Amino acid sequence: MMKKRITAAVLAVVQLAVWLSVGAAAAEPSSGTSGGAPAVEHCVGAYLYNFENDEVLMEKGMDERIFPTSTVKIMTGIVAIEALGEDLQKEVVITKEMLSQVAGNNIGLKSGEVVTVEQLLYGTLVNSANDTAIALAYAAYGSVEAFVAKMNEKATWLGAYDTYYANPTGMHNDAMVTTVADTAAIAKYAYSLPLFMEIVSTPKYVMAATNSSDYRNIYNRNCLISKYYNVNYFYKRAIGMNAGSTPQGGYAICAVAEEPATGLTYLAIVMGAEAVDKNLYNYINAIKMFEWAFTSFTYVEVLRADKIVCELPVNLSSTLDYVTLVPEQAITVYLPSETVVATDIRYSYNTFTDALDAPVETGQEAGTITVLMGDRILGSCALVTTSSVARSEFLYFLARVRSFTEGRFFKAFVVSAIVLTIAYVLIGAHLRERRLRKRRR
Image 1 (tube, helix red, strand yellow):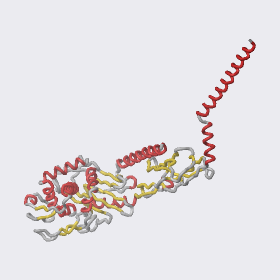
Image 2 (cartoon, one colour):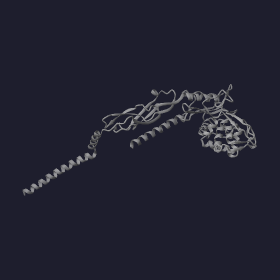
Image 3 (cartoon, one colour):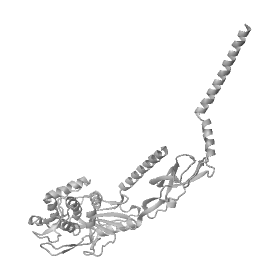
Image 4 (tube, one colour):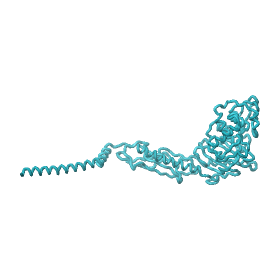
């Protein structure tokens, strides 16, 4: 029981150290060029993040205030899904009041047209349509003003304190601002919503015919997802989010890409990007960051489960006088692909005792091992025995005898016996002397 308590305490301390180490690494800003990271060009801000390991790989201009452009619709989707997502087939009647507030990109909704919440969500998050975004605002909270208030409330809840929304579409408003850091926090939350990710990953959505319109083919305006608007930036690993632009805010993209073979998923954000000679640097930078992440980082097995770490002497056995210790489990860590385990990784271990007493069971915890890379703790696990060792009952008996004879009780007994014996002898001698005196008298 005591050994298990010690093991738990050691592992808890190591896990805390790992958390602090990773957290510190994630919080450390990157210039976008150090450590082999690609240089992002012609943009105000950029960000690259790995979901599985909660690790930031690149940062640039994180706190620069910028116009959000169409990335506003990420929050529009979040608020709409949380308000209306339980009934996707709920019907919404399009009104003149709704359409009077529409400007920019739209799918041509008509006054009196009956559509579903699901159709409005796909129009907003796939095609970045402004008429569907306005309709969602009315369907969810009765007005654009009330919906925008919920958007700002949600932003504050997510810690996006430098973000302010003035509409649900992303159409320019001088008061509507955000930062790359805030956009990252909002995008991470959106990624946690399955319905949101299902919709934004759709290259083409066929909107069924309504009472006012034939079916509509709705194509994704994120060119990483769909080739419909531009074939130059299609990226096979991309699984969605949002892209757009305004003259004031430039080009922006907030994208997620994954590689199923490695189980790694990344978030890339580029904001305030430029178009140079018809080259869109929101897409160029995002693809560059994704490619660097997928080629430069992977999962590395830094500790094998069959690695013999040490030998530990075994007492009270007539068959084996030692047992080998191995890690309880392998440790695999997200690291640069160029990591060489033999030279870059080191180990620190300790055992609970200097020797084990038989019987010993296979898999018995006997210590801990910690894996380090430089000053960074990568992980820790228990050390366990590789074999069972039976106890010799004769040696056990001798050990018990020796233990008893060396114990305080036995020593006290011997001392007491000696004292009593001496006292007995002295008293006996005294009594004999008294009898002799009486006889002489």
